[in-house]
Image 1 (spheres, rainbow, N blue to C red):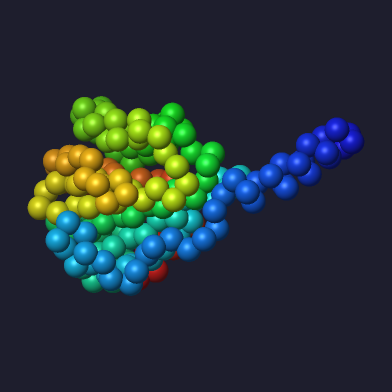
Image 2 (image 1 turned 90 degrees about the vertical axis):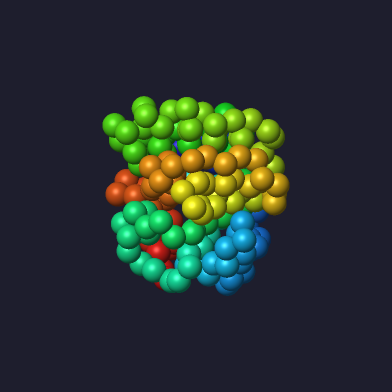
Length: 184
């Protein structure tokens, strides 16, 4: 390995800890989301290369481990994401969301496109380390909050299944994260 390449790798290794935040996210054991009292089912990290992109916490009415039952259920649930890396941009988030829906919904993603576009629009606002996003399913709609402020409501059980399927589906964004969320 060349000296130049070794130097570059060393600089990247020294720089990365300052680019991601390893602090614990606000994932209390119980939380009220949109008027629904839910319990923390599991917390996990979404890694990519050397980064911890975000922490995710799954909240349900009662602890559960069956991803399919969670996705198909009509009971209230929430996914909380805390952004942990300054490397996440609006463009990155849009790409990740669109790819996630393609993996999660497969050939049904085209029918969800207007609602996916509505979700992606939320990420146009600058994304900063520490931002909290809550995706709360209740009564047939998914409410989206950024830092406690409601930004959208998107209707449909099909949308909820595809959205939460990004993390809990058969082809999740990261298998380790799925396992952590389903610890029950």
